[in-house]
Length: 305
View 1: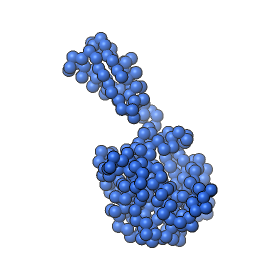
View 2: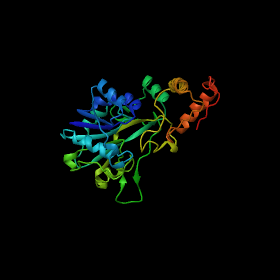
View 3: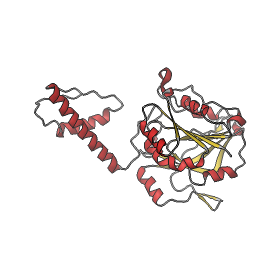
């Protein structure tokens, strides 16, 4: 079996740092796709000797985040010697994944998916690493109790739909299936993976019961968290709460220092601060603290908006 992989990772290096060192061992050729501003992902790939391609194809034609276009760019860089797996950056493949795939009589005209266990937080992930619970055991048992099992996608009211292996784990053979490209009709992350699997007839979409992956989450398993990152990363970093608080303190101190420098340099009596809607809630929290802590300076009046 010759297995190539594509991982799209834009501002997901905090997850990739936990999944890449494990997942890279399963592939003969692995490519990570990111944008030209994401230096953390690039540096992480350099450390683990994984090829990283930086491109802004995500945003061409005014698109918000065209993941399908980036996947196609990655597909064009593969050797196309056999099987291709599209994998999300926050997916962990257990140690036996490659061995199991080698023993399954995969059919080249089919697309395959896998179930996922949902790890709700960084703390739970660290607990698992320190005391890993078996997922595959004795070459016969598959345990689905380590974390809550994620939903499958299956259109049970459509006789032509059925099971749909979605984008966190999709395995297919481009030459065997004659499916060489990913859909690009949508300028964000959802739907394109469903359109991809629907290129295959219902009978050719198959769940691999032997394979179970772990999906890392930073904001729990609530319904509200679903889809937050479909147009780019919005969720909080995958790290401990203590690290998150430390980072907030550092950011506040940096803002405090910059504010005082600007006020002193330009002899300002009013300071207007603009924040994009994406970061407004964060900056409000920061500025509330600054109003209490940092604005006790020589100037008598500051105004924030």
